[in-house]
Length: 94
Image (cartoon, rainbow, N blue to C red):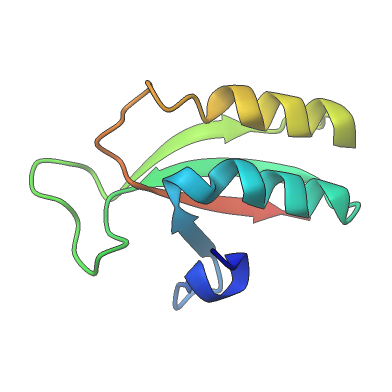
């Protein structure tokens, strides 16, 4: 699946992807020399927040880590067993 065509750009300019593409997105951003600054799980990629779920749950905050550390930490934070009901991930990068 193409990362660009699967992205959803929100009105505020933030970008989210289906969660299963999160690792590929993290790698693409990191491999381009950019630093992943944060990850938020989202429940509204299908248009509306899922019933009973918050719209957005913070998952990872870079806190100033270098590129390689940020990439590894972002992968670890995106553990699919953590809050699996959230099917979308919003990725923030520099």
